Image 1 (cartoon, rainbow, N blue to C red):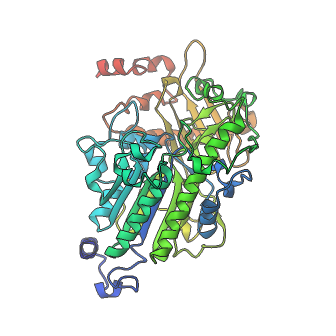
Image 2 (cartoon, helix red, strand yellow):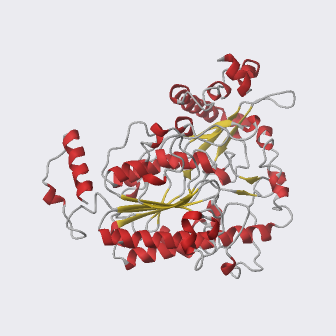
Image 3 (cartoon, rainbow, N blue to C red):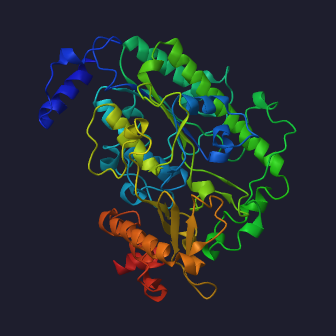
Length: 510
């Protein structure tokens, strides 16, 4: 703890904010640090979990008692989005608080650079004296550092997609006998970290990235009874008949055929039973971790954050998987319990616009640390005091994964989602989507083709151009992000984009 206090004091002196003696910062928890400025942090991260998999988001078909309780205890966020809806990029967003074009990190693009990782929340919190722990799917690689195991005090992470079989995850093998399926093994890891941190009387940040409910669906068999024979209500936008108004570009990736390949069309109940069973196991894990916080007497000093790296399209509009900007894949659950919040127990729902870029700033503010100027996100702590004061006016949603025609940039506000589908060829012209996600959450009416929505369309185009301007000025010079600032430009013709439509051609141009 001495290292933690020393760094806090040094920061305060440098910033000119040291105005009280260290003794005034003591509290009853440890007599050494102020729990209000340095609570413990538990960050729980599902993989491919949609909002419709959680009871508190309105699904009466599912059992998620611990997630629902977390929402009742704290604050539930209704307009929370991942700024890139795919594993690797989303995790980079969370670690760094930056948009993908600044992390330079995603499948098909490249690894994270060390200078980017150096400003991530695990590194900064550890430098400030926090015990840091990570378990599960790390999801990215840092050049020269690999999975960054040495940057954590407790390590239970793994490379790539990791495995549902605990025995196959090297750092988690000791939990195999009791928890052969990985989901509950991560809860066991979390319990061990909480106990050890309590012994050391040191603030901790526990980050767990569950593999579930990522495909291939592999539920823990101990929960086979939960949804046995269950019939699930299909969303009102389920099926191909609800895709006719969507951009043709969005149908050229793997998301469109997966509606049938993954049997949402002919075995919806079977697929959703497996999906929700995997989520149920995470719910049990959440309960185990919260119970351990209580058992160790640190629940009142611990902030718990639960969310997912992206949502999932389970048949809505006749699509499957994620990546695309539609609500089912871009919007995700978020519940935060901060024991100091005056909103606790009031079942408050925050409707401000928030994103995965906000987690790193939030955790740094929890630790009393300055938020680096490079971060695009905003701390969420103010919304835990007043759910109507904070959030973003607008955010970017990015896809630069998969076939080039599916690459797109979107602009999100609390009410609208605007996407410019830049790609055109002999089969299709560039197109636009504009949805009122507040009044049309199923995205059934594309307002971009409605004459009555001209003013809104123009306003959202302007906002989109503002987001693209940030890309142009701030994107990293490596890993193939610069050319997208041209591809996504509404004012550049498809013909003039031809030299930028091939990585090889772009390299020759350079």
